[in-house]
Length: 303
Image (cartoon, rainbow, N blue to C red; front, side, top):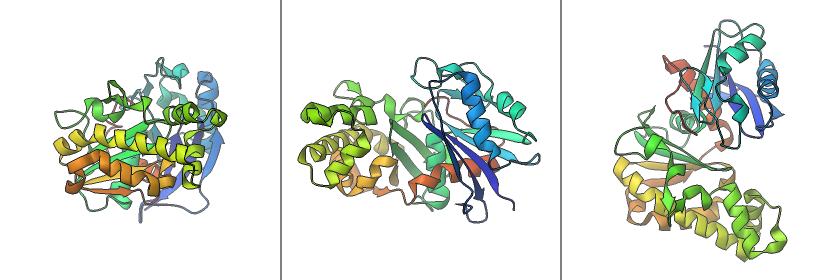
């Protein structure tokens, strides 16, 4: 079985790699990464994506898997970004057609999938969620990504999941969750405590917490406590067996796990809460798996 070419699109970078479906692992030395300006023009964004994808040479008989945040029409490959602070230039653009026109040879097919769904699928296929049926996966980075999976199928509608399956839409203390748990929110909370910390991102705050900075530890503790409180009722409704957490902030997992479990309250006793085994590769693996097993492209239409 040949490898699957994958493109992962983020707000500040794009990464291309190849995934070996025999073991659902990235092929050694197959990864290429380019800086990406999510606020740039449509032509500049498409050129960067095509340039990065070209590094792994998707063939004319292959499917190129693309993991990209929303809002996005994954079935039709059309951007729905508008006033979200990233990729606004892609609003209404047929990204499938634009990439197909630039890649030589054009791939047989381009399969789009929500990036958070791709992460969850990767964990279910080859990560911490192997062998589990009802899984919730979240990523902690620029924002809070989420996927609710039932035996490898993303659930995005119904009474057991938040609207669209997106936890970023949840409210905590009357405010959107991402005003408490996000790169921007954590950096702002630390800056309010330590004005000299202006300019630090959430990763730097987490590093300070690991090094023993009490203010940084308090900020992370509050964020994770609130995250658990917001997630708890939905994990219960979904009947989750496992909550797997990935993203850059999990480098400080030893500081995050306790407050998160306390925020979950009684729900924590009903499921396992674990860190991703390899957060950096799960989205690529999940996108490749989705491309191989889906008849059409994606399910979520949000971020």
